[in-house]
Image 1 (cartoon, rainbow, N blue to C red):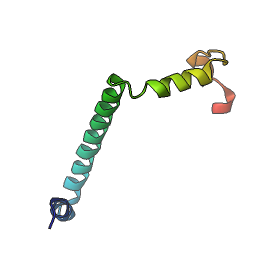
Image 2: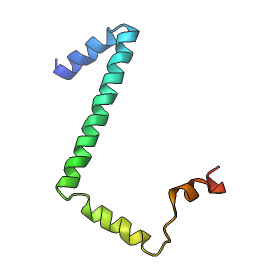
Image 3: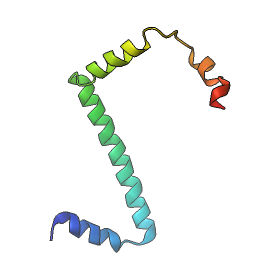
Image 4: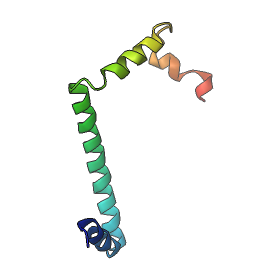
Length: 76
């Protein structure tokens, strides 16, 4: 039996409140890990090409203040 299988079996035995608390903690950890990965990718320059592409796509468009954008009737 693998460690993952053992963990899955242990989770299946948890009372409902403990299960939901575990899920909350895992979601929080997942979000923290995701943030760390994005920060690491940014430090290593892995997002530079994406940033440049997005900048290029927006060069011919006028800047719109966020408040004006959020007031657009299309968003309602």
